[in-house]
Length: 313
Image (cartoon, rainbow, N blue to C red):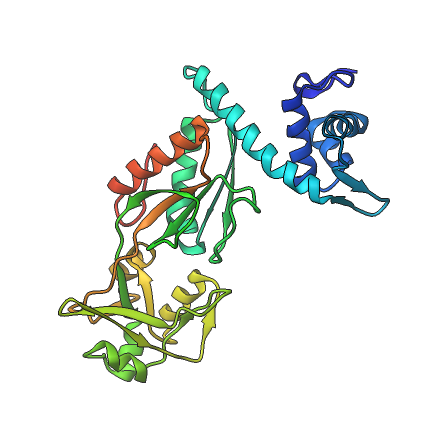
C-alpha cells in the first residue's frame, strides 16, 4: 500500500522509518501519526517493527492506554534526531536553488517573542511560504532537545552549554517604573536605594531574579531587591510596572514603546548595568538550510530594526 511522502508499507528505508519513530515520540501514538501523515496505522507499526528487528532490541512498549519508549528506544530517539537532521542538512545543501520548506520550532521569552520576534517570523514566512513555524513562548529556559526546538532566542550572558550560539544584537537593561509610582515614592539616587522600593521580580523555576546587577567606577556589585509581587511572565512584570505597582529591571527592547509614550520612566541612568545581549542558540551538529537562513535573517533584521519593532516586507 502506497503511503504519503513516498512511504511504502512493504519497503520503508531507514530514514523514513526514523522519521516515523520521531513522529511517534512527538505524537504519543501510532494512530496519531497515521492521521497526521494520512497513512495506515500499520505503516507506522511496520516502521517501528523494522527498526526493532534491525537493532535486535525492543524500542516501544504499547498498551491499550499508552505508549512508552524503552531505555534502548530513548537512546535510538536521540541518535535518530541527529541522523535525520544531518540527512536533511545534506539534502538542503544539494537543493540550494529550491525554496525553503519544512518545519521550524522557535522559542523566546514572552515579551520579546510577542513584541519583536513574532513580526520578524511573519516577515520571514512571507519570504519563504513553504515553511511551517511553531513559536514557543516561555520565560523558562527550555531544553532544546527535550522540546524539539530548532532555535532559541535568549538573552545573555549565557551559561556554559553544548549549544551553538550566535550574537544577534547588543542590548541594555533599564530600571524604570510608572510616573505615578515615582511621584508617590520618590526616585532613588543610588542603586542601594532600591532596597526601600517595591520591586517587581521576574521569577525563574530555579531562582527569582532578585539580585539586580550594577557597575560603579568599573566595579560590579549586586543590589538585593524585594517586593510584594513576582511572576514568571516578563510581560506581566511590564504591565504591573505600567499600572504603578513597583519598579522593574527590563531590557530596553521590551519597554521602548512604553518609554516613548511616557508610561514608564527610567532612573539611575548614570549607573551602568551589565548588558543583556541577545543570542541565537541551536543544537550542535548539522544545521538545516532553513535554520541557517532564519538565523541570518534575524541577525540582519535585529541590527537594523527600529526600537519600536516595526518591519515592512
